[in-house]
Image 1 (cartoon, rainbow, N blue to C red):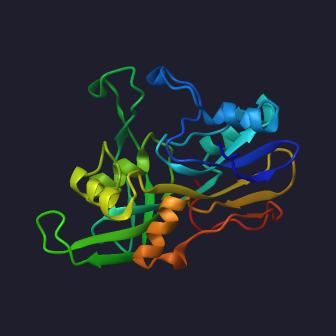
Image 2: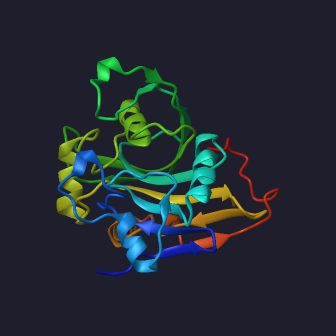
Length: 258
């Protein structure tokens, strides 16, 4: 088993690249699973780590852990208070809007109660089309197939928010078994060897909980998405692993913080 890619580490926290398909920690919904990101990271570093936020199991990308429960709690509060910038890359069906804010309310999906009993909560995601492609093949009912590369910036933190918002808008993420369309999912699995959710957390920026600096992390895509981008002519949009740590007063995006 290959070691996890460490994107950033200091005395207080560590950031890693979470592989697609790996659960972050044990849950009641996956009792039979034996492998978890939390335990792999503890074993690799030979020390305890504490989760700060979450990524869906099929989503890859940057995740942060604290080395103490106090640091993790401070970072979690930053996420809850929308002081953290998050960016994702997604491959979607169709030609997505050039830029748009999606603000469909979403019911929380915690698996403990029927959805009808759960109130719809405000949710916002900013999306931007970075590129698109038209393939001369009939996948569904049209003679050609169109797909887009979308950058998504969630401004709230509802469960499966990006996946549900894009699906609701009519541009489901390829590989999404729950909110997508199976015929397009199969096409990407068979034609491009991409049989997974094509969603990756590629950027995270937050104020360090112990130091007067802002940590900005960029995370490269995994081999599956990298090969796909190169095949579709999107190699110019491939992110790289990188770290910047400007003072807290610098480096903030003009986009509303998440």
